[in-house]
Image (cartoon, rainbow over all chains, first blue to last red; front, side, top):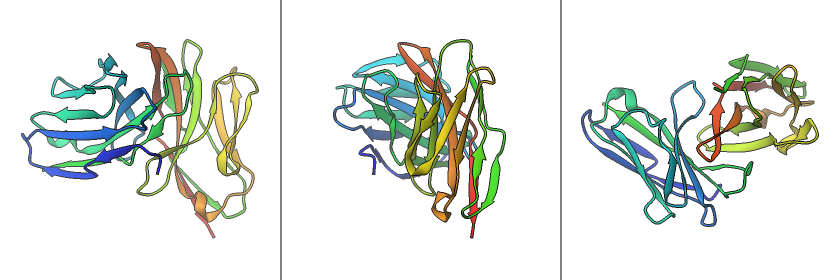
Length: 114
Length: 115
């Protein structure tokens, strides 16, 4: 257990529905990252936050994806109008603000879109 | 733009044998390099990282990696593997972007240790 938690661990939804995932980072970590991991691939960077500021979001997969970190603590990733291609593991990681510091990953949320 | 190539998708090896998992990267700027391990049904865990300094980096569980700038490689090695090393191993490179180092991961190498 790295101290990063994600909820839910599993989510099954029907195509067209909206889903929201939550990530709780290690409390003293001010950077938070979201990744997507599909079968047989490594994690793919989506976006990240420094405290409550979203500093990089150009790699979010489409405008159906959005993320927030309103108070600089937990974060949510929302996917609107889900598609079958969104089925994947969604990972969250946190780290301190120091360059090169270790990222600590959560267990992930596995999404299945039917 | 940075990219990471893990040359082997699967590496089978017998217990107590040595192993090398290969990783090559491409980047136009200075980078940080990482190896992560993912055990079945668990999150990614950092094995080791290269930021600067000595090119030979030692990590947890007896793993080490060597940064070779001229060959743009960061291969992971262990002199004697154990059954419990069976897992997925990911090489990652971080390049500066958006005020932070944005990581790019390789596709992963599945290490399968046989008794």
